[in-house]
Length: 275
Length: 275
Image 1 (cartoon, rainbow over the protein chains, first blue to last red):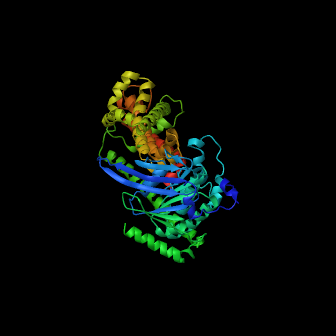
Image 2 (image 1 turned 180 degrees about the horizontal axis):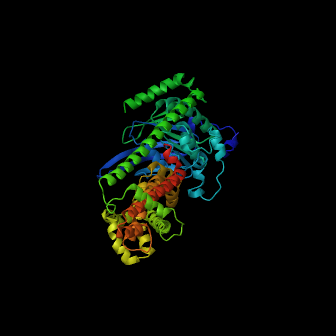
Image 3 (image 1 turned 90 degrees about the vertical axis):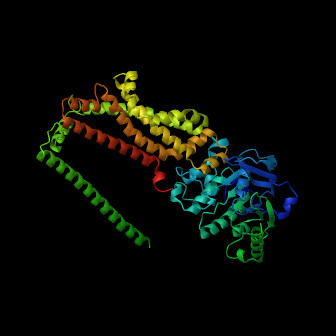
């Protein structure tokens, strides 16, 4: 159906949670720390002793109170900021800067308003290491995200949900191994958000990417993830690691009524409340 | 539903059109009243024409300068062409230099540190006061007119491109960094377009300032130009002629503003329709 390279291998098989113990993880962070110094010279400890390990193809959510440093961790993973300490590697290589193995979806869609949807989506194929090569595969991505027919529209002509879909397409344009998402649906209304959650699940299942999603929403994290990591208030570290084994594909008609779903949301909430 | 919407829209449109038409009518009435009071005041109070001519006399002066062949030595067209050519040349030179220096200051802290004090000092200096110096350096020919226009056009461009580039949304820069874009790519593909609304506001100011700079330099000595026309009319107390030249200048200023605005609407179309 799609011409995204990974998809041609046939149906993507979600790794069992037990994979963790076997092959080496795709993302490995051990005792990662981050210290900021403010303008007044004060030191702020944002992250401390953060251990995270994510397997190939996993969908992992990171939930935590505001200001716990989850966005900081994502920025470090994306190579936008250096860690102050600890070890962090992607596919065995230490993270030293932005990498084409990683696609980032930001809080706001961050589409460039002077570019059309197609131009925005193909931006990763025209800058940096991709400079000078002919962009390919964007059409298939846009089709997958339900944006066919909107290629030549400008971002201001799109709804918020469609803008964020285009942003996801852009993050997938280089066919990265990992998709990092920083509260991508936070600004959307509840219905659009649910619809995009279902879409994201489909895109993830179809593409076989490894996803790390940062979110405020416990419901969203349980609905989408294989694992939900709960972070403590600053300095952020992992308090709990919940495996979510709800059957897939999940949908908003039945999944929220599943006993496991109810149990997990309750348990995660209780960890957050007592953090 | 949609039919109702469109009907409401036309009602709204008609209302807006009526408001706009009545606004225009009011403005025209205002102008007519002003001219009538002016004419009546001068006639009844017996104001000498070498102090204040009547609108009819100004109109006569305008006619004698405009309703002539393009190459008439007493017409307005030769001075208009001279002033516009010098102002345009200065505008282009000053704008390019302003954009360049403003960009360098925004991009490199060291350049900002070195140049900012001078920029600030020159900014607060009434630049028209430099005109005599410019005439000494560039002579009474076109050089001093172009230099003066360039000098006045330079500052709004420098300040606005600096401000615009520094105000680029940090998320857009993060996006480009996450794609391993080079510094030049970030500047050309994100910062410069992001600053475009600021830059166009600067160009709008610069166009009028360039005209002002040219006129000031012409006052100090020139073979031709609107400034020369004004000074010559003043020398023979042809106050109606001075008024006519001022009206021409005002019209030129409005024309330049409209041209810049039309270009802006084409290039920065994404800015006005709400981001």
